[in-house]
Length: 321
Image 1 (cartoon, rainbow, N blue to C red):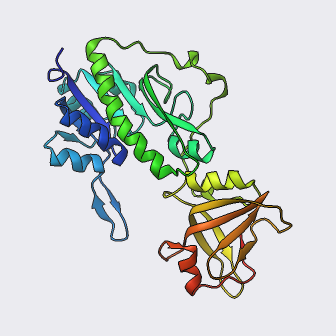
Image 2 (image 1 turned 90 degrees about the vertical axis):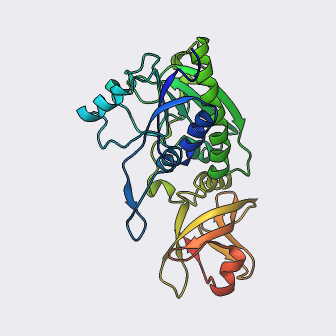
Image 3 (image 1 turned 180 degrees about the vertical axis):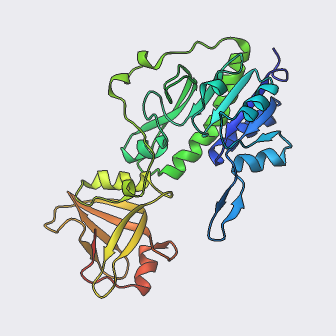
């Protein structure tokens, strides 16, 4: 079968999903429908914002669907009328069986980890937060349990000690677009040999990647230098690690911390205690050393370097909790 004859329905919502759709469209594949989340009000003005995938679909005159409920009879009927041979899911939501089981060639997902590791909603964050030195992307066929289907293909990349979740996200997004196209080509050629995750190495000790909440992002300063450093970069630039700054003469204030350096040094300070010259550096005492804060943001203010902040904000007997 030629790629122009293969009828594809694509499902996705954020920026991460746009790259794969773009690669398919520019590669001349036959996208008969795009499904994305319903529009939601966002920001202070509660203006309705289109998802990045919707924006791309509109710009390229692709048929767009935004169902509130994926089991709604009218949506199922419309989806069936597209007569898709294959469905592709990238950063969307959990699909009911009536949807993923519909196309004759199945439905495959692009997941931003080396499955079976880091199944869940935030695989890139958790890989960096846990100090992994490698991660990757996986295409796999959908089945009942989330992120458990048979693996089609994988691509591995290193995670540098200086990477944060933003840099890893962007690398995986670009690689993901190429892998989705490659996977479609292999499905067309009939060369796919899916592998059950249960038979893959590392299956015995699976690390999860659950959804991240505000409390997940609260820094525990009593942990070792590397653990705190990895947590901060695994949440930067979004949603960002945070702590509460207690500074003499000021009300406690929430602070987001984006970029830091590791300082291994013995000390007898309380964990969370701040050491600063009030000019150029802000260091926080942790187990086995200090976290040197490079970029941070006080609640209601803009992101600044430590040096910029200290020009107008002095820290006296400061402590992070």
